[in-house]
Amino acid sequence: MASLAASWGVHTPPGKAQFEEFGKAGIGPLHAQLLFNRGVTGAEAMQRFLAARFEDIPDPLTLVDMGRAVERIQRALADREHITLFGDFDADGVTSAALLMRALRALKQPDGPLDYVIPHRIEDARGVSKEALDRLQERGTKLLITTDCGSSDVAEVEYAKTLGIEIIVTDHHHPPEPRPRPFAMINPWREDSTYSERYLCGAGIAFKLAQALFRAYGRAGEARQLLDLVAIGTIGDVAPLLGENHTLARLGLEQLNRTTNAGLKALIQIVRLQPGKIRERDISYALGPRINAAGRMKHASIAFELLTTDDEAEAQARAKELEELNQARQQITEELMKLVREQAQGQTANPVVLVYGDKSAWPEGIIGLVAGRLSEEIKRTVFVLSQDDSTSRGSARSYGDYNIIEALRNRADLFERHGGHAQAAGFTILNSNIEALREHLLGWQGNNAPANSIRGEVEAGETGEIPGLTVVVVEQETSLPAMSHMVDIVINKPEKQLTYDAYTKIDLLSPFGASNPEPVFRLDGARLTRIWASGMERRHLRVRLRYNESQFDGTYLRKGPFIAMYPEGSLVNVIFCLEPTRDKFNGEGKQEIWLKILHMEVAG
Image (cartoon, rainbow, N blue to C red; front, side, top):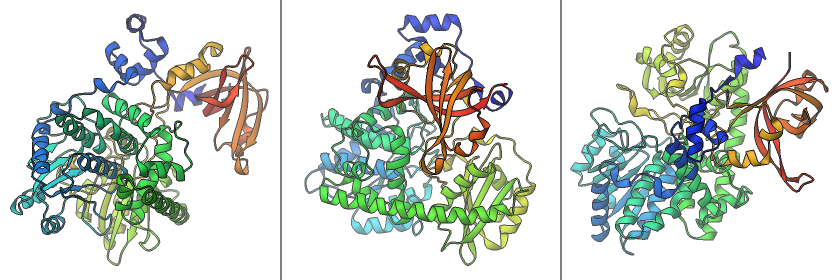
């Protein structure tokens, strides 16, 4: 088992006394161990996690400035002041702005002015800019509410005051020191926050404001209708799915499966999802990418208008447009992947790969996706640059312990702007400095902080946390987080442990994602009784395993070309997740399970 041991660790289970304590609280051993592995170590916390009750989430008024923000918005609604929402162009920013638009539209006077602004990815400055504020003053905006942005806009907040515009910031990014001083800042990362949940995304923070507002008007129950948007923002932003995030995402998925939102219904229909069976992966691989495609390919306002319309015809038109934009995004991504692979082939000896091309074929909205995909393929840190006449925009993705942001900071003189995280960064550089950057990256040996020590895979990026850097947001496609290569439980009694009943218990921990990965199991010494290639171009493997009297079928994705490595009749060690077998029942009328194999090798 040497090679498995080298690449996959095994969680240490709780002690006997801990299992007994959890059992007394009504928590079975499977749930106890899985939750313990995810850092949920107290019986009461385990109970809350499994129950996922809306009534148990923290009071929104315990967020600093929440009461002040609610009072100001109530005054603006009563006086029919012009309110503008200011969002961001990723899935979290769009869903958080759409969420507050729906809430305020329900609460405002029929003639109360309410509009929105979402910057263009390329043409506009990120966040609240002075140019945007000038335009808003011309519109007559008196109250500006940001979603998923604003925490770093110190000078802009002060400028807004000179224009007679008051700002309420709702955001989840780390503010700099000194932070902005708007009328109100709802951000659990501000220095005086005592809120118990730090890791809400932009949509989560916006929802807390909507929750407090509906409560203030005696309409608390209406807030729950917005949880479908919270689920998309939270899962799309790869927020850790523990604590309040887990509750909001689970309840949000339930709401999404019965949504009355015309835009979401149209989008669900066009991607052929089945209401009632929508899971977190459908957000990550179907809904989220299409919402993001608007900002990457054209303008995020298309997605915003989809999520805020009540007109079915408009919803269908917007959903169709997003589908077309996403198809174009996929095509351009594939074309660019061919180009970056060609350049990377000439750098096989380099620990860091740097590739670049003209922005006409290397669009800025796509290079972050490509950097992430290439890094996964070649198992190295990747920099992808989109060149203009004199400057280049770049996105970088780390592999292993290569700390990108430390590497950039070590030669800050090379950049016009830069920022990001250990695992992901963005920058602007003069074309004349590119070769100097390449030489620096290849020779840099200053990796003191591991790349996984800072959450860098999110769509929006916590850029305000790094002192002295100009904010540059880093992005990649919405996706489920990479496997942690940790086994939750080693199976020794598969006939009892690998059942449909076990699957239903595991499913109570969903939705799975960052900090709450899908449970992983290991079974050693199973007999491989049958194996065959399946799928398009025979790219996958189907397997049948026997262990004592138990038999299991499974799928090993993308391993079709390696079928010769697994002779039928051999003993194998497998690492896998459990899935239900669709519409298949055994002779006793019980639904069966199958194995989603993550790793398999011949024993010995």
